[in-house]
Image 1 (cartoon, helix red, strand yellow):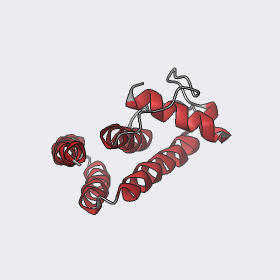
Image 2 (image 1 turned 90 degrees about the horizontal axis):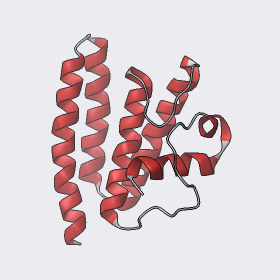
Image 3 (image 1 turned 30 degrees about the vertical axis):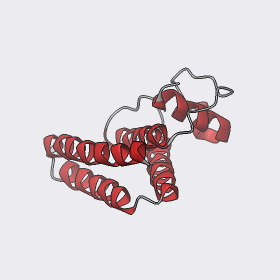
Image 4 (image 1 turned 45 degrees about the vertical axis):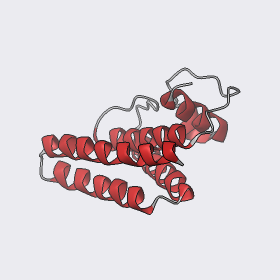
Length: 136
């Protein structure tokens, strides 16, 4: 199961308004991989999806309701950061929290290219976190 399909399955399993807007096919009965590297992939996808709900078009959650998209984005940010905090990787929590802040500032200043660059830098930093997870 890909990280996006795992995210879709988790959102469907939670139910509610967001679950009704999940657009990515996925089998909610198929368990997501249990290793730390797969967990990093899922939580990064949750945060990326949250970002897309705020500033673009989501890949997993699709809604014509702009308010619901913003709420879904907030939920996805929280989901990703909470899962990361459960892993105990405070350095990666800081990287992603800074990323969210940098993206918000970049978009407020109408500089989406800076947001894209922030995603690239954060993804590289998280690659190191995933490598540490593999080593554990």
